[in-house]
Image (spheres, rainbow, N blue to C red):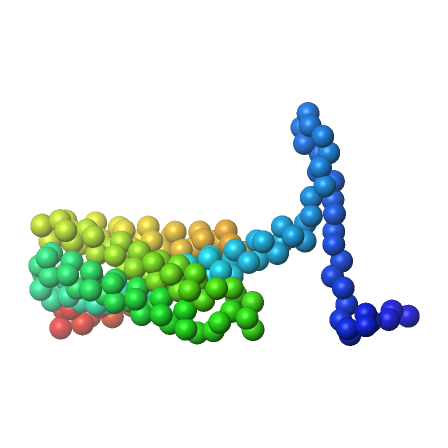
Length: 191
């Protein structure tokens, strides 16, 4: 019968494997340490970055495209997109940094997570605002729409790569969400 350790917890088993390098010596690899490092990277960088990228990309579609279609002016659309990107980036940075201290959740430094999430939120929102620096409105609108498509596919890829979500499932989920928000912005902008 297994007896618990004096502290009442089980010890974690370490798994050591031997990896053979081509034309080189055999070297031990600690898979537990590697798995812990990968998990920490996903919790501290990938997850907040992905949340920020998704939020910045999707939530900024409605105000940007509503302003663009209501005014049919590239400069106005760009300024609305820039204000949305900056405001959302700051908001999400503070939201993530102040949500928990990382001790209970094991998610690490709240300030690192906040900086990552805020920056990625800004990046997601500014990406489809930048085409409105093009003076010709119709051209800017087409380029911005293509950028939105590229952003959504990038998010689906990141979800597949780091979150083990099947690509088609991830693409379907993010594209449906993006289309709903985009449609909202178009309807408001054309009213």
